[in-house]
Length: 335
Image (cartoon, rainbow, N blue to C red):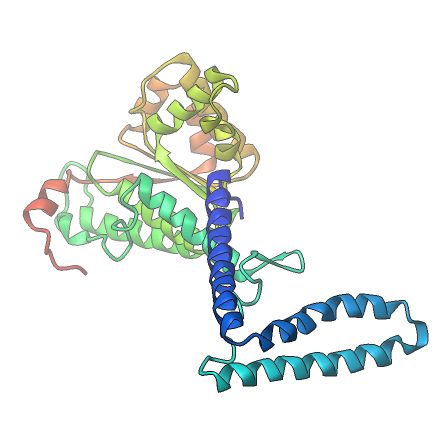
């Protein structure tokens, strides 16, 4: 897993919130119960002192094992007496236990130095929530991708049936997402505007995040703007610190609308560096663009398109902008 520092920080904050809530509730309940049943104070002290007694017993030599066994029996008896007293007074027997969201790791996120499943799930959910903040990924799923918006007749100019072509692309992207791994190939999704490139990119992103992979999605303009601010702020703005490293190291980088960013020598060089470095690191990248290969070469350079041709699987989107059709007929039946 290679999530952004922001995702790790949010997840850690949530674990801390859960832990704090459980322990504050436990403290309030103890205050309540101790006031009503003072006997439980001494019982809880006995239970709490058991750990220190075990440590002391280790230095007892040959008699240590016997002492520890006797201590364990005494501790279990104290715990049972505590449960019985609580029940006799109308409380659940576990009323004084901290109600952690995850009882396995007690909301610490780790068990014996190994990341708990709850922490992995929290990181995944946090990353997905962050992706949804930046894009309409919750609505951009494979299930909501409707090929009926594409004409089911052969285009005389290209000899291609747009619906059949989109069915092939949909199936390819669905399989790509299902089999996604850190060594998956990079993809170039290109064609005219409004044909579903962003939708399918986000559908892949969502599935990758659900599988526990770290995904960064953004338009070329927004991503390059962050890198530009990081570069020229030179440590004065921590908000953007680590942006370039995150783009280079994440499990999957998705650059949407390549070619629509404001052009400058810095941005052009940075885009090439990000793409070239990820090729060298063998990390998958998905690029969507409205530009043809010829237009990409004109906007950037031959070296740029050469890297794309050599290392990216290319998916050509055919047809006309379907966004108006979707607005006029949103209930179009799915295949």
